[in-house]
Each structure stands twice: as C-alpha cells, then as structure tokens.
Length: 116
Image (tube, rainbow, N blue to C red; front, side, top):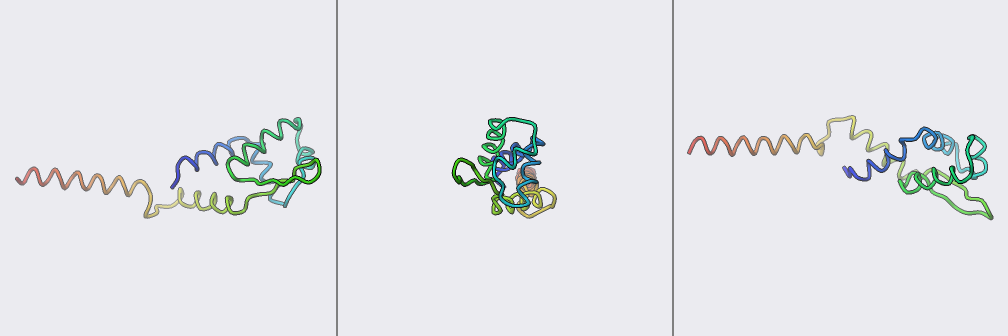
C-alpha cells in the first residue's frame, strides 16, 4: 500500500464540504456554478476545495467557455474502494505480516545464538 497516496486521499476527504462535493459529483458531471449553488461560500472557496480534490486525483475537470465542469475520477474512486477494502481486511500484503516475518526472523536468530 502506498501510505503517502492514501494519506493524501484521506486528507482531501477530511473536510465535510469536500465529501459533499464528491456526493454531488456521484450524480454525474457538474458545472462549478451548479456545485456552488449547494453551498454558502464563494467561488474562490469552491476553487480551493476543487483544487484539493483534483490534487488527490479524486476529481477531474474540463473547461467549457468560462466555466469548469467537474466529474469524479472513476479510476481513482475504484482505487479508494480498494484501499478501504485493504484496510478492513487481513490481507497477505498487510504490514502486520511483514512485522510477523521480522519477529520470526529475530526469534530464529536468537535461538541459533542460544544453541551455539
């Protein structure tokens, strides 16, 4: 698991307004002006939230005229789903298994020293 990438994604999701924006975008592509209608903040604040979501890779944009249109990055949303699944299950590549292997190796080394 890429812990830096995972932290960046969770940091982007750490603001309730950004989570709400993702919920809005789950209905399909939205113009910034339409997203803004859901909130009581300014266009620059929306731009900041969208920048954070785009830097995390969760949202993509396209420009049409003077407006930006935003949509979910479905590939990254699938990765987010996989990250959550990995965190919730005891998988082979879990860090705890790496630690178990290291502990076993240390125990084996200690046994070898004792038997010498």
